Image (cartoon, rainbow, N blue to C red):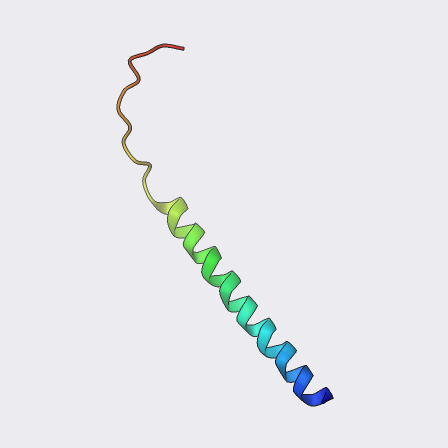
Amino acid sequence: MGVVESFNVKMCMVSSAAEAAEQILRVDNIIKCAPRARPADRRPC
């Protein structure tokens, strides 16, 4: 059982690392995008 459990833990770690890398790349792409144009606010604060 010890070998199988160790393998499962390592597979989970690799999967989690891949998901974390994907999220970092998504956030990086969002930050690179230009801000969307917003209409001028006609109401002063």
